[in-house]
Amino acid sequence: MRYGMAIDTKKCVGCSDCVVACQTENNIPHGYARDWISETVSGTYPELTLEIRSERCNHCDNTPCVRTCPTGASHVIEGGIVKVTHEECIGCGACVESCPYDARYFHPDGYVDKCTFCDHRVKNGQDPACVSVCPTYCMYFGDLDDPNSEVSKKIATRKTKVLAPEAGTKPQIFYLI
Amino acid sequence: MESKKLYNLWIAALGIVLLAGFITIIMLFVKGHGELFSTIDKIPWTILVAAYIFFILTSVGLTFITSLYTVFGYKKYQPIVKRAQFISIVSLITGLSIMVLELGKPLHMIYYVISPNPKSPIFWMGIFYSLYLAFLIVRFWKIHNGDWDSKLSRFAGVGAFFVAIAAESTAGSIFGLIEARPTFFGQFMPIYFLLDAFLSGIVTILFISLIYHKVTNTSTPVLESIYDDLSKIFAFVLGVTILFVLWRTISGLYANRPEFAVVEHMIDSWSFRAELFIGLLLPFGLMVTKAIRKNMNAKLIAAIFAWIGLGIGRMEMLMSGQILPVMPKVSIQKNMILYNPTIWEWVICFFSLALLLFLYTMGEKYLKLGASPKLATE
Image 1 (cartoon, rainbow over the protein chains, first blue to last red):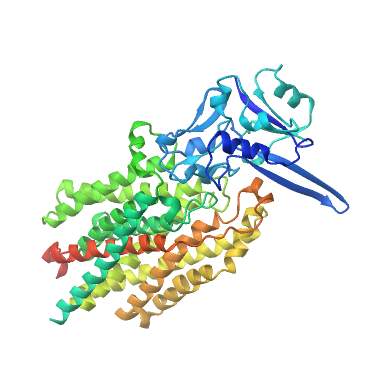
Image 2 (cartoon, rainbow over the protein chains, first blue to last red):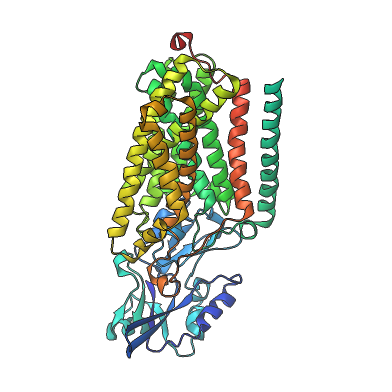
């Protein structure tokens, strides 16, 4: 079992519904976010391309954030989900610094917080909140080890990329381009 | 009478800063970091981490100074060992205290023991600094009781030296192992920390001792000869540090990765110029000129400039790795991130400095920090 995500950049309209759903589902304090929308413009006028991406923790296979955590608060749970146990986090910030995706934030209560793939929903057979609300169905979540899962099929049949591959972290979120 | 008045004034000034600090600490525990500090998720390591580094560097540097006698056997330097050893302890305690205040959840440090992660440099730093503090305390206690050369006393002194190297280079590795921040990443960072520690130690012992001797009129030819030697080492270490800062800057300008754009930004900043010109080049110029170096006041002025430069330099180093966002987020955050410490963060910094100076003053008053076996002072 290896959870992962595929996000179709051709279908994402950047509505931020995923961001709002995450904030509501996970009770994220005002001004903070576990996921966000990025826009990249490439090319030269008039041949311009706009890519919109819904981004979050990439739940990497090679995790600098877990390595650097002195108390083991940052750890990997079943299915490869990278989690922070708030009760064990001392708030030193080492994981925030070591994440090449800037995917973690300091909760005002003093600990570090990040995307969990909504593991509490996944345990009950549901999709993460962001995936479930997407109005264009641009996000696919599931087991990357299962070749018959929708996410695996999308990755197998479409051209994909990951963010900052040069970081060597083996991200498990794939962007369909 | 005059000196008594000056002493009372000094204690009152420190008392006011300490009181302001204690009030801020209480507010910090009641209101939380989010309310009082401007630490943001994009820049997690801010001025309190800079202050923490400043104090631990100073502690380790002072241990390097004591090692001239303790490890390398130069008896001439014995008269400054006890003072340096004591300031090293209070500097370490100050640094560790400020670290606890900086942590979001300091009480969770129990998980260092319950669920340690040996792959984490911060875990090892914690282990090494705990061991280092223990060695320092044993060594100081032995010296205080007149035991300079028993097996245990020497073991603690030599042990403190080697653990200090391990602790300080591990502290440097916290930055040096962050591949996501290319301006931090690299094998040079642990070495840079050791170099800066040595500089901090020399600056601090000159700064504090020369003021102490000036105020109490206790300078002797033996002590002046020691400070003459230290100022030569001071000039050498300043020279190496200048080379290091220059080559770090030049390599940053040559680099192609977008994160190194921060180097150009830094060169244009007042802080970089202050660190280089006031903190490094000016004291270097003073200390390499023999006629000036011989003068005790010139040594003190050079130490003060270098001390200010070290403070600014710590902040400069920290910000260089953080004011540009990491790569994928550059598309939504293209500009340098601004960080300005809040008044409360400044209060905590001044509190830590006052704490160090207060503990040192008490040490000077009650622990005879200038004491050494008679043989060494003759």
